[in-house]
Image (cartoon, rainbow, N blue to C red; front, side, top):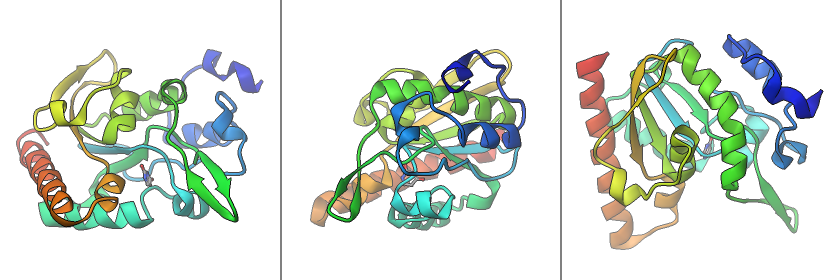
Length: 211
Ligand code: URA
């Protein structure tokens, strides 16, 4: 019963979530010609990294953050001394939302309602992985964790406590999305890369304290 998924019990393993997201029809994005992309990483991790949604390349590869944004993310994680393989990496929305432009699939931002619907899966992942620190990349990821829209420039640089029963206490750090950096150039790009690097360094320092 596709439409009735939210009334099912929350899956208790990552394998069960993966199985369920492939048949999820709770929002229209799952009805496009795409594949659900499951989070990747250890099923217990001190750090959870959350993006917006898979892009074209992630949809084809079936893995999060393997395209251009992922490559930039990897560079910055490396510089900050964060081992990506030790983190659980996922997205706020599990399917790629796009419109056709000629033969190309053009990324579309998920609607707030779609992010809120997909929180069901993100929260299930969080309850299993029990990260101490969560890094949200961009406003969609932040909404997926908070259930409300925030301004990145206002919330970056300091953690927001996320303590709800059952998932342990974690703290949320919010930074820009690497795709945003990729759209900039010149001085604006340099400035945003610097801020992004500073946010990752703060997360690294925090992990050293709590993990
Ligand atoms: N952008 C995201 O937000 N997530 C991905 O997995 C890839 C690109």
